[in-house]
Length: 272
Image (cartoon, rainbow, N blue to C red; front, top):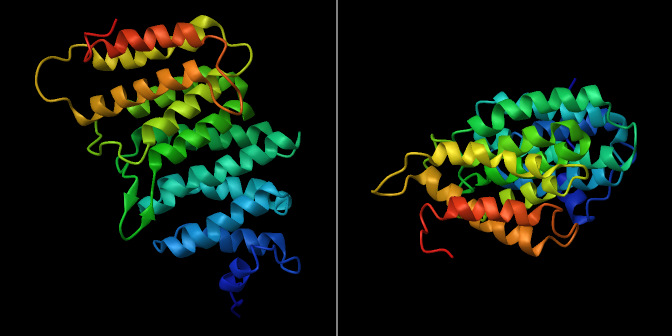
């Protein structure tokens, strides 16, 4: 016996009012299936929009861990759109968990982190947009998830800073950031740097990963990964000095900015 799918056009037309009569496990299963779809209207306009709202509103608290496990499983999916929407769902789940203590067990967050940290720096398809698939945004979506993991697992903060550094310096990159990926990475890094208790050494130590990647660069065209790295560093400098609206400037902003400026002098030797 088959079960009729939910009437998503009607749900969207009703401003995504959650269908109260439908059991949460069924909603979770249907959302997880739709979040794999190559059709951006199904995946993004319907499934992700509904998931983000209903998770935020607490409508899916009963299946939150199921949604997180399902999303983590998609990091090894063969299709790019399935992989790149997984961190968005995890971001929503972790954010909801942060607002309700005890809702997301730490062991579940650790399980999701293991899958995320293996995928994020290794993803080879980092296009922001595809004319057929719509938004993909592996770098930006992963950055959002990294910031959410820093709140859920504060002991992972320095690892997450290094993870973002490995993402921006990934040598396999063949896509130049054109959809503000550098800004999304900078915002995530700033949010992690805003975490209470980080020492100055912890706030700047992750930049060693960037320095080591850039070491030995010489004359000639700038590789794509280096271009992306320099773009992210410039954006990060602006973010830590100016601060962000929902947190201000990090405690060690001046130290981070000084280290970033030293790295930016590699291509821009004229900086004062």
